[in-house]
Length: 254
Image (cartoon, rainbow, N blue to C red):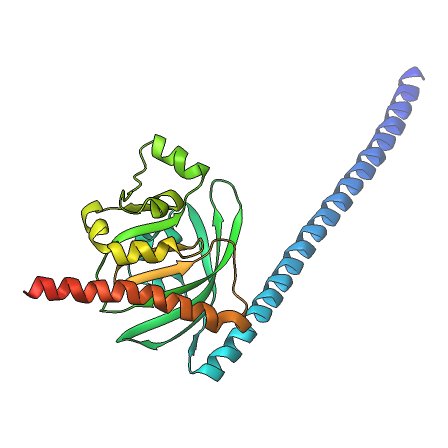
């Protein structure tokens, strides 16, 4: 009799335990399903917002291109520019994407305008900027980068990053950091006319190499309404390097 009672109680407890387990499992499944649903909703919402952002940014640029004789290039990537990995703008420390790009013939080559977003692999911070670029056989430049001096620039010099200074133009050396793979060629490229001009140019980041130059201000995008003004300023910078290249070629031919 005691054995039957024990078996009955054991079965009763076991059924209760199974019901508890089933209840807990049901709760866990419900929580997991809700979590998955929230994650899926966030992904869908993120894709929607990104597409809306792209549409809002691309549409005005497309209209500008149509009205001013530019070509709109859909789905452009960094590889659109030859040897892009050698430019710090597209550096290996970043993951970047071109949001929208337009181009038109210019001085035997091309001029480009594109919005670019890049995220640091180290800090996860994202920068969005508008870049004006030139590709022309008139340019034959060493690879270099020029950007405003900062406390980080000073720290970079302490660990060996090169900063090319010009005693003849202390204001330029004070406000800008110039780095290059070839210091000798960089000094030839940044001749007196270029140095003097940049002493009077607001803080801007600028880099080049071979037949390319890229002009931009980090974290700053350009509204379509003011794009022509920025293009005019960028062309003035291009002209400085174009004329230097012509002089260099003339001297070389002599």
